[in-house]
Amino acid sequence: DTAPTAKGNSAASRDIASYLHPYTNLATHEKTGPHIISKGHGIYVTDDNGRDFIEGMAGLWCASLGFGENRLVKAATKQLETLPYYHTFASRSTNPAIDLAEKLLELVPVPMSKVFFANSGSEATDSAVKMVWYYHNAIGQPEKKKIISRKKGYHGVTVAAASMTGLPGNHKMFDLPIDRIIHTETPHYWREAQPGEEEEDFATRLAEQLEDLIQAEGPETIGALIAEPIMGAGGVIVPPRTYFEKVQEVLDRYDILFIADEVICGFGRTGRMFATETFRLKPDMITVAKQLSSAYQPISALFINDRIYQAAKKASDEIGTFGHGFTYSGHPVAAAVALETLKIYEEDGIIDHVRNVMSPFQKRLKDLNKFEHVGETRGRGLIGAFELVQDKCLKTPMQPVGAAGKAVVAKCMDHGVILRALGDSVAFCPPLIITEQQVHDMFDKVEAALGDWH
Ligand code: PLP
Image 1: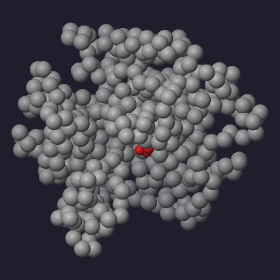
Image 2 (image 1 turned 180 degrees about the vertical axis):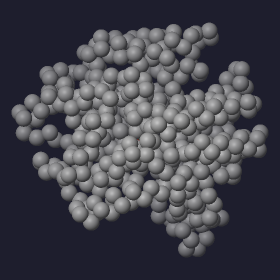
Image 3 (image 1 turned 90 degrees about the vertical axis):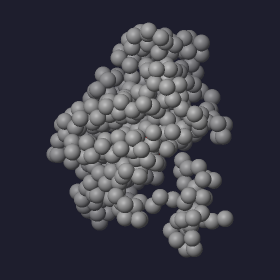
Image 4 (image 1 turned 90 degrees about the horizontal axis):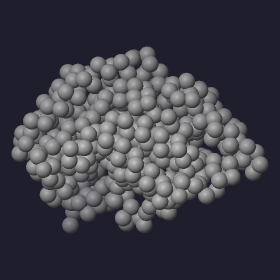
């Protein structure tokens, strides 16, 4: 049987016939067909039926400058005309890669020594895992290899990255996680705190649980902990007060490296250039992607501090080569677009703009609490979510889990806003260029959708 939208030689039928979609219910897709987006401008995208949507998720938490930034088109074109590709293996280099690495080191708020480039968030976090292993081999602690991640954390889908991701759907059918990767608890105060437990006491308890896990595994076997400053795909979970400083104390006690995964939070999302600043983190490595190029080109980066760099340098000198890198590491077109993106952030005062619009954004998000089935609203800067529950007081999950999230997101689409369901939480992560008026417009539409739904 063919899907209703999949008639003859339509784009929908050709999609169904040929394209394996990422993160898609494959059986349902054959029936419903694709939703084809054909163009974009500002915070809006238009589908092939000519319907406009506010892209309330900036795509996948990434198109920070929206969908029509001409300066990025020009930067890409200029670089394509000058040198469309060259690699950076074996000491070759290109000017855009050099300029971008230098600029990133200038912007990063904690001391970092070098920047490594890749193409996706997954490649950056996977590279961080390999750096942890390389480093500990280099300093003669080959047993210190396990990585602690967190349940509901999201770090991508390559083998090590998917193992660090703490979501059952990323593990179950893929025989993951690999050994050496273990998970600690989710810092979700509203959902996980015990009755009467204060936020700071909850943070203390989580840090103690982390320490118990380290003790049980053997501190000499734990190489690093990876964490998103705000968990994104796991439901937009903002850390409880004092959480990261308590976690850092535990890591310091056992000489465990800290990797801040800023793939979503980096470049203004929390109202500062890096969430490392917002939450006063002290990472040894930082991963970034997405908003690094406003998603106009695939590019990601891994920052490493000098302790790691010096050890790696010494080891690679002995071995001959640091045996890691991608064909497209530091791709000149992607690097040129990322550089221009960073220039726009500075010249257009994007971070100040985020600080201005984040107050109305967070206020309108909080207002959604007035709806009967909205159990919690949470967020920071220009990222947020509301969680749907059966019963507000008891926080009982909706049944069946995930259906309400999907239904609300579908209603929001009917009202012209694209959001993302993460189970029964619904996430917002609009382009950073969204104006205050557009914030109100978006929430007016979402309120209308929630009113329609129930
Ligand atoms: N890390 C975080 C925090 C992410 O949110 C994501 C993607 O959403 C990734 C890593 C993986 O990035 P990619 O999909 O580009 O591989």
